Image 1 (cartoon, rainbow, N blue to C red):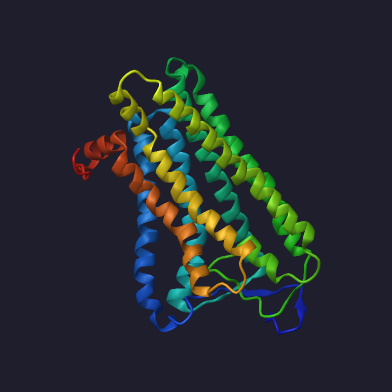
Image 2: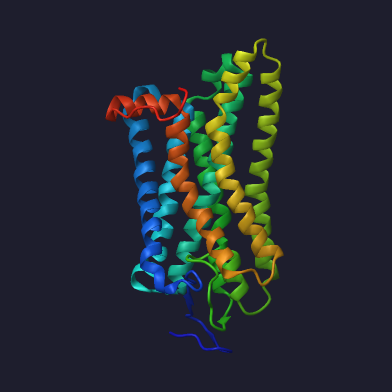
Length: 318
């Protein structure tokens, strides 16, 4: 059912925004987007396969990496249909239920990914600060519990959001700021008092991303303190190298997330082009870059690639 200005509907439709001013170039713009999506799907699927078939990768840090790859696959498959539909078929509309479903999976998977990054930080903390107790602490049961806790937390905290939005009527043009359904974006289009829903969204961010970021920061402060107390500089460097992949992944995930959240909460009249760039960076770059980071920085992953596919090292100086 179409939405008309000044009217509200129980079954609204929403319109995705394309790249303003570049509508005629959608086919050409879709090429790098499509390549990056395919790269994200292929790269994360490959990581899952390697962790599954390589005995040398049957360790807690790589189990967490497999969970991260699975989450990135979910994010890519959740967002790719709406993004590519805009570029290829000029389809900009989505129904309320479909939009709420996409929104739920995007935010849930983002929360799960943040939780997995915390688990990976804990893995590095134990490996460097308590190496003799590593195998006793990071058992298969511990890995399963940490991964399961991240999933349960995300689903539990995100489940109310679609129900909150369904209680509001939507009026106006219902034009979304992104190429997918994003909770703060949809909340801005709702009519009525959205104070409680807005506060709940803020509480969710604090209880997930803020708490996770603090835990990761504290973990690395402890890790750096332990590394600085090591006897030799060579051991310091080798210990720090084991954290390089995780640190890169944390930055790739949190920097776009924080930037997008700031744009939504603290800016007005922001350029639509900036919104489009930041939103696609947030959900496209992370799944695309994570496999590259681990393929280029992890010696174990490189060894598994060479063994299975004859891939040579590409890092200069190694």
